[in-house]
Length: 539
Length: 62
Image 1 (cartoon, rainbow over the protein chains, first blue to last red):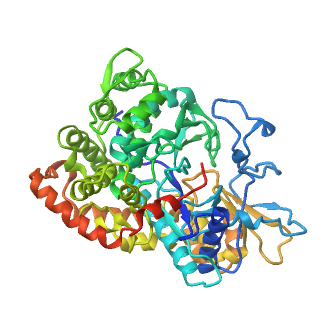
Image 2 (image 1 turned 135 degrees about the vertical axis):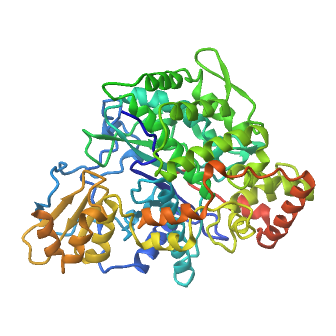
Image 3 (image 1 turned 180 degrees about the vertical axis):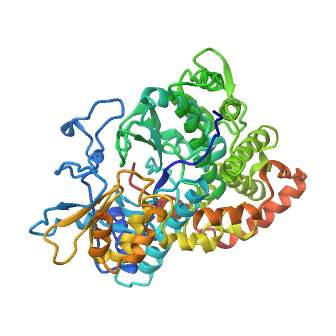
């Protein structure tokens, strides 16, 4: 049996955007975020606003096998409403229709989009959770679609004199101590023991910012020290493994909430990554992480070829002496030359650790000849590791922290300003302004100074069209075709409320690779109404 | 759709393994390029950087 590394995997990115009302620093961010979600919801309204269906969510379940007591949980972790038991089965089943419409807290503004994404208010930020995709390039498309969703909401608010103007930023820090997340999700074979997964991925995650970091002006959680660092999020990492996301942030999060059949999958929820404007950064972040997970999954096979055993031993040997300290060190070392201490006493640079991961993946097999994306990701990963070591400036078109640093160093040279200067901090913030006329990143795109990967027309289509190869297709089409009859939806369910039916019908979607265009597009086309669709699904 | 688009996009690009490594331009050429970029950026950069940066206050999220 030959093995073929692949980036193909069910994945997604959730982004909390920075939110500001120009000229009013004290404006309530929760209210502003709600306006953003409501403005977009109104803009694309299908007549009825579907609730988020919390039935299957359990944010307190820990992948290490225990469950956090609700009473002991930080309130920020209580993201669900666990009042009803999770159902099972793949066909629609009946749910009693409530006598009154379930109370939907206006502050918990929520919109389920026709592209399968979720737009809502998380804490004090508007958040776009992308639909499930299976390829890194699609991840870029539907992540960029989220930027357009936010831009549309901003423009809608700008045209409404009764509502405040809002500006949104795709970044993670305010420079005063606050941080907000960009979370990546990867479905992983449940057969991989969690402790093994965490241990084997950790050195990769610690060193990944060398090509995926967005760059940040200021060092320390409050930017106490003047300077520049590679990652937005590194200084907020305080633990190796843990359940929390808003305090004591861990490198590997243990939330065990797969939003899918828990016997088959776990969802690796990564909270340490940066919000990226550069498409290559998003593409490689998803692609390389997925490839490393692919290798780790090979370790769960009953019989393993010697090459797999050797490759995994190579990963195990990369265990860091102090992963949290190393996270900060990697981000603060612009020379990329600092050796990190390994548990076995060796000292390797972040680039050398990344090279070990790349070689471990490619040592067990080659990508299939028709798997262009995997071949491209592997080639880019290798090329960047080479050039980052020898000529980092040549990577400024692909690596976000270097693209940003290039501009900042230019300003420092031309205007003779030191790192503590407000203009440099302003560049860092305005870099990720989502308004194209204000965004410094957009200026670089216009000048041809950074590489882009996806066609702007495809991004626009991804705002309304769901990915075709995951259950996001069913969710998105349910909203676009029969949105008026969808009373609630979630990652793994759509609840229909068909007039005249005695009960609601809940369609569970426990398998993220079902409900694809291949499975249900013809059913949607053949169904004149929601009732017909449900009848077709039930047979 | 996604798969088709992907293939179409892939065709537009040279095969990655053979992609030429960009020749390293001289420091001077690089500086000139950055200066041109800075001119573009000057047009849009917040004129009162100090106030803008001070006013950029967020609440923590996840």
